Amino acid sequence: MSFEIREMPEQPQRALLVGIGMPGDDRREREALLAELVALVSNLGMGIVESRVVWIRELQAKYLCGIGKAEEIRGLTESLHADCLVIDNLLTPSQQREWEKLTDLPVWDREEIILDIFAERARTREATLQVDLARMQYALPRMAGMWKHLDRQRGGSGGGKGGGAAARGEGEKQIEVDRRLAHERIEAIRDELETVRRQRATQRKERVRQGIPGAAIVGYTNAGKSSLLNALTDAGVLAKDVLFATLDTTSRKIELPDGQPLVLTDTVGFIRNLPHRLVEAFKSTLEEAVLADCLIHVVDASDAEVLRHYETTCEVLAELGAGDKPMVVVCNKMDLLDKERQAEVLRQMRQRAEDRKCLSLSVRLGEGMPQLLEACVEMLSHRVVTQMYRIPQAESRLLALMHRDGKVISLDYEGNDVVVKATLPKEFAARIAAYREHS
Image (cartoon, rainbow, N blue to C red; front, side, top):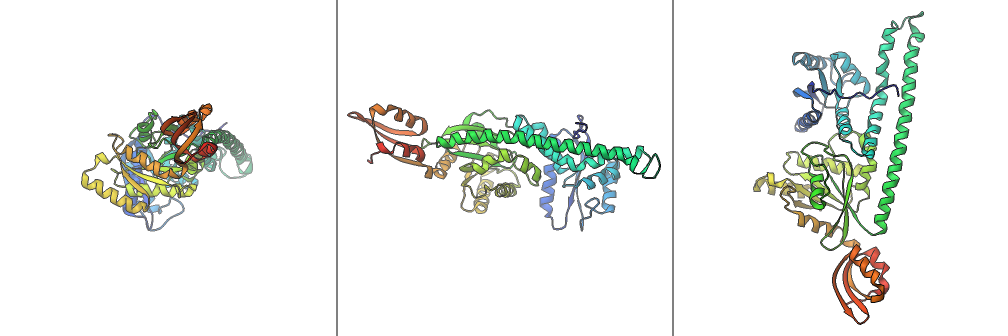
């Protein structure tokens, strides 16, 4: 393919970060988003010379802000000796080109920063494909600006041998070739992702056939989802104090206190203003949340924006069609708060979460794990039955299946029969109904 998606420079840059405050924006929210952008850019190893919010009275098509504000920002890049500009908004392709023309610097918007972080963190084939798809979709409408140099080299738009349609023809043909190649690549990625999705569906069907429920661990990025999965299952998933530490879906099977098996699945973290193309691209990963029997929603209780992070995740879950799933809300990192603040966070979260159970947790200290597992038992209680079974000793394989797929509470021998009290998935219990006997 003759074009490339531009990459972040290897060496840290002197980046100026600007958030453009829109009419009606909440000031605290806008400042929090900019602070989040600082963390995102820092994760890419770029130096930051300054970050600030610029407020505007009305939206303008060319730069989002007016020309005066744009010139003010350009002046800042010069006085601070910045060598790139990062804008904490979503820019159209034409707006991005206008900013680069005005500042004579590379300009990134919030979406491109997130895409580059995703590209850096992707490890599995599936995650890499998903990132590639999102980046190709982002780059496609920006290709027109790649071939401006051909017009300049040909001497502008005048007639004759050096100008006009003949002058622009080569550039136009190159754009057409690149767009065709881009569309072909996008379709190829989608086909590969569909293959992965079918493989995942086959694995999920086997779990359903066995009557094994699933719980998706969801939440805002850096809330502690991977750490929780590791604590419950020894999964060994990368868990670092950075945004989007891991993008790869990991599933592990555990046994709940009632003996019921449960498959826990870690999912990619959410973030405010998550680009819609990323939600689309990651649907094959996020569908674990859609198809899960219940959700474990992890929030960082130590973050000042904990309520907003909770709402953001709920909004994305609703967009995916998973908003009505049974859910337990886990307030993680409670060990970082004093007792008074812990109580306040729980009170606020319970008020916001309405009828959903909210628990206090510290993955780091291992506190609150038994309560979380009991909450999972409650959410899945409709899937199991606890009762007595009388099984002929000749059917010992049924007893082995009970041990494998359920929890045997008691076992006695009466003549040629085995009397068993067990908690079993309803699907499995129905298969041995012929041997059932009520106590």
